[in-house]
Length: 132
Length: 317
Image (cartoon, rainbow over all chains, first blue to last red):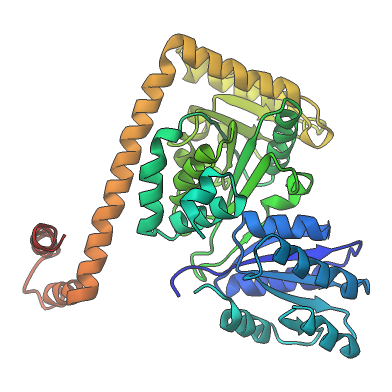
């Protein structure tokens, strides 16, 4: 693939802890990806609109506030509504093991919790984006 | 997705995809632009440049919001540096423009420089054309603040706003070639800080030396974060536009830009042929080896390459 993968890194909801998101953003950049870093307090609508305007291959969200079961699927559904279901959606943060199957079945392709090496996330994104 | 139809129907997804295709140098994208070129020329293109940390993204955000109040449609192309080592980039300008994300009258696209050295990616031209065809009234291009030679922005913008900031070292920074010669308007941002008056005065002093033309770039103190001076800045942008129209300098400037653009596109096409050549035939490796073995000098090697290139263009195109 001779073009950089474009990833939107976003923090939905009212969660101000962005160190993890920044670590992932830097790792993705070092892996040759273009990271559109949107910052804190994004609504699902803002994240989806950003992903569309930026023609993103992937949306990577970080939540440490516990609101993932609501916010992650909302982003997936909005992407579908806008005809952008080919955008890969992944997430990370403070997400209990028990919640992961539910998130996967609602359309989040991968969940990467604290301790996951960034290389795992990078390889996953590279392997699973829809457009080559 | 029918990209062209989508673009003409003002579907943002199609426009976004077309911008990507232009970035990736896809022939289909160029074809669409060729077919729609007569639809360009309506948008006013404003370059926002200046040193890193001056507040370019915030200024762009505030100007866009002001224009939205006036019912204008606004496109923003925000360029950030691509790592020369990894090819990746953190495109973080959108962080300053969060409120605008969901505004239907705004389209924001972040781009990496992808190897270009002058603060702008080559594909920025393509992105501007797409947004122009899409129907934007104003298009802001925000460049990487390389600090000394934001030359690329002049190739693209009708008006260049140089965003400066007080206390960035001595006046020598201000007079280095490039900065003073390309600004049509100078905005001293964060002017609530110490040294703002002095910075503005230094810029005025440099302008006294550098300019003998009819149009003297104005210098304005603003505090973008607090929306101070933004309406005035927009007025100065309008004034510059009026001046260009009335004096005829708009056409002169535009013709110069088009000349440069044609040459740049041509240079890229030539290089592409050379890369294709070197992929097919190893010729550059062979020539390098011959020079290494002192069978050839580099200049003669280049002559040989020129012969192969000409043959390829004559018989293979």
